[in-house]
Each structure stands twice: as C-alpha cells, then as structure tokens.
Image 1 (cartoon, helix red, strand yellow):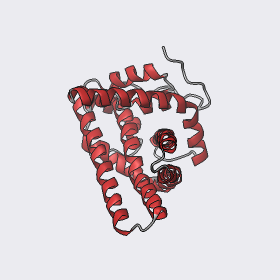
Image 2 (tube, one colour):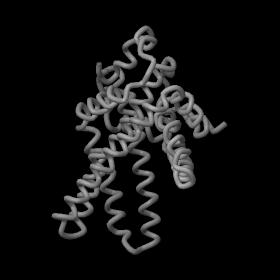
Image 3 (cartoon, one colour):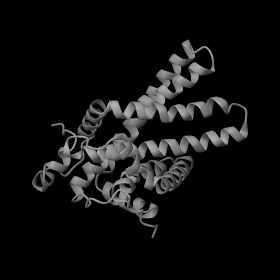
Image 4 (spheres, one colour):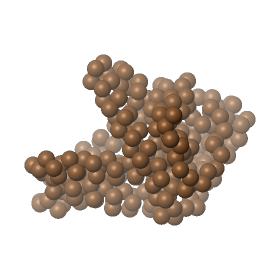
Length: 255
C-alpha cells in the first residue's frame, strides 16, 4: 500500500514496527506524489536556478576559465536546489506545505557549505571506487544516499553526516541501492529525451540554453526527492524523527 507524503511519520511506532523493510515501489509512489502535488514550487525554482547554469555552460565553450567557473556554478546551484527540495519534503511531513519558497531557501542556505563539502567528498569517493573496482563505488553510493537530508534536517556536520547516513541505510542496502539506481536511470533518460529534442529543433545558442534548463528542471527534483523520502522512511524504521530545530541555528562543526 502506498504511503502519502507525511504518512511515514504520522503512522506511529506500532505501524513502524510492523513495517521493518524499505519498499522501493512505495518510495517512488511517495516521490511522484510529492512531485505532482508541489510541482508549482519544484519546477519554477529549478528552471530559474538551472537557467543560470545553462547560460554559463553556453558561454563557456572553448574557454577554460569559463568552463571552470561554469562547473563551480553548476555544483553550487545543484547543491542549493537539493537543499531546497529536502526542506520542502521536511515541510510536507504533516501532509501540507506551510513554508513559502523564501522560507524553504532560508532553511537550506545555512547548510550550503557542509552540503557542498559532503557532496564533493562523496562524489570523489564514489568516482574513485567505481574507477577502481566498480563495486566499492556502488557500495559508497548506497550507504551515502541520505547524506543531504541528514545535513539539512538534522543540522549535522560533514563527517557526522557520513556516519549517520551509513547507520540509517544499514539493513536496507539493497532497496536503497535500487531506489538510487532507478532515480539515476530516470534522470539520464529524461536528459537524453530533452537533449534529442534540442538537437532536432534548437537553431541557435539561445534555444540550446533554454532546453538545457528545461531538462534540468524536469529531472533535478527526482534525485533530491528520492534522497529525502528515503531518509524519512529509513528514519521511521530506525527510530524517531529528530527534535524540531531553529532553521537559523548554526551547523555543528565536523568531529
């Protein structure tokens, strides 16, 4: 049975004890339910953020300095957007969205630095693991799947977030890996579709920039929604939600 947004929290401890394993199907049912219900926030915010990235990409052709700047902008924008989406999922755990877009941004902004640090470190570790033996990279991809929600919601430091994510995933590695893999496939397929459309009809750099932004707009929410929904479902299995905190509270320093 699919769980509506917030139901994983509202069901209570008895329901949690009866449902000890993560379901990939129910996870994506909730992901798409949130996507549909809050597309009016997810898509416009994604479009304007990733339009900036697309403009930098369009200007950076054959220019090493601009390519470096474009990569930096892409990482910062992607990280900020992931924080905003996780903040939205946190907000709708009671079944409705109470925060404005500005409030969601304000919740995510204080943790942008640790999100960037954790994102870069995890990307390096996963890439190295895949290049060397593939399996270690996929293992790290799985146990670090909920680092971003841990940082945004629990206000953990970078290294504490790695440990916390590993502890939450432990015992549910295969369904977490399955959910992450499906999310990746959806993102790749969506990007290829928009890339093919752009190649077929885009005549000039302006249309290429717009279609690049549209591709990111449609696909970017998936990764963040999957991570946030996985976090709350794993939290329901492993233990109670963290106590509410002040969104302006400083992030804990790394241990």
